[in-house]
Image (cartoon, rainbow, N blue to C red):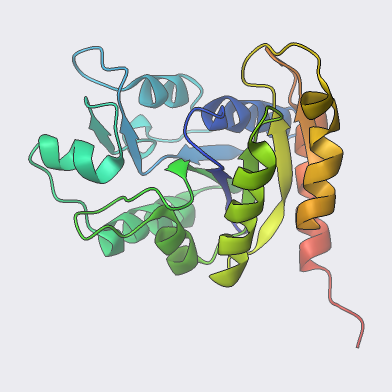
Length: 231
């Protein structure tokens, strides 16, 4: 099965949480799931990043933990700046090759979580998540939020992804923090679907712990994507 990527409309929209929920739900359905995040930055404990620790803790299905998050840096900033501050030069072709090697070894399904938003720079020459997704050619879920500002951020993300030929499976609206009920929050999912033409595959409440419905929706969307179109 083709790997599935997760890209956010911004940093801190809860991509790692969504990735872990999706992995849990897929495994509950009998799928063998590996995880990969090319670069993770910040929330440093002296040896690793918070996202790297969380993803490795959720590893399984005989995946080597070293393949889950190969590049981690202390600075909580864009990957290209965090890498440079650590004296490391990241290369887009190398990042793509690493992801492809993990995908080739995956027994069933790989989930690729990208760091930050679509145009977050990854390398010293400012190649972005969008460049990596385009190079890999894997379909992506867009993880967004329901709070004020999300209509603009999500519409821009979807438009740029489509401009670059990135295949989108749908939206996951993640309540990544508590929110007071409001017109903006309550209408977000419907407005996002109308603005982008993408299906909202799940709207996850704050603190969601069950990924089974999310997994079912994502698998259905991926199956529909692979169905032959009528002549």
